[in-house]
Image (cartoon, rainbow, N blue to C red):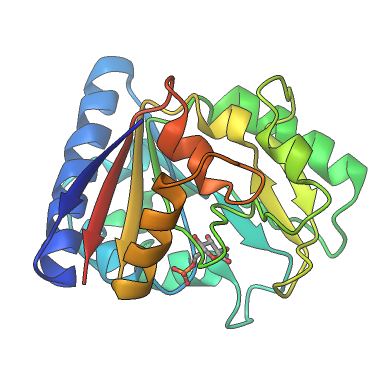
Length: 231
Ligand SMILES: O=C1O[C@H](COP(=O)(O)O)[C@@H](O)[C@H](O)[C@H]1O
């Protein structure tokens, strides 16, 4: 299921999202002494990251990871890890821990096994998940065009992470699965622009998750996704 909140500007959205996420992380720290958050990459979250990095929080108790990563080196413009380091792991948030998805040069089965174990032991279930959405309806790196989409959306997938090779987007990816992301305590979908509004409407007007994987987060009755949109 989903709840849509519309903001008049991107900055208003970024401010509201940063405040809400900071409050949720503080609450998790108060309840259990630590907090975990997965953020998305791409072009949408930069302003939100900058504002969140300035929030007062015991960041040393927060672990940040990505919902997905492109298997590129960290100095590449396409690296989501680089985006997070340059915009979120700054200011007050410089003390946060970062759980790296990109480990080594090759995405081997052994790398995945190690990451799956580490994610289950130290990160999951996430306190906060911030998703983005591509214009093909992908979210995280759960791409409709990929051979791995069945595994990525399977409700009984015991693996937290999977390797994905999109056919219509560049770079091999590593992505958290729907099964692991859907256990998050608080899920947000961060969208900006008219094109994303059109894609959102399309996603809400159909039900085939394999055509638009974002539908799993918008329509699964066990997942409550707060959609934040600004023009
Ligand atoms: O490739 C990706 O794309 C999506 C959407 O990105 P945007 O540029 O349209 O905001 C993003 O959520 C995901 O993390 C990223 O790897």
